[in-house]
Length: 127
Image (tube, rainbow, N blue to C red; front, side, top):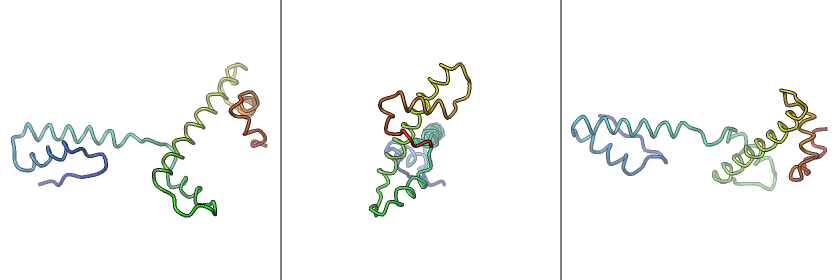
């Protein structure tokens, strides 16, 4: 007899189906439960963020004014950082394409910073 794994992503329906299958219902219910759990595992495996949350937490705690950091805050800062990096890379790529090159270089990032109003706050950071 297997015990269902309960996590934050387990729905009430999955728990009910798991209980039915462990009670010894027909094999069709058991097969459907296996498919539902497989589908749930695929969703769980798909990461929501790419940057390591532990590293972001460590960087946040380096600030002497920060004592406690909520897990949701870490997630939001990590996700916003990823979106910022994505935006900066896309802007730099535009300047790479304009110069008919295939590799994004430092000068392309600098051009993006100089020419995009929302990136002006980064001036001087690459020096």
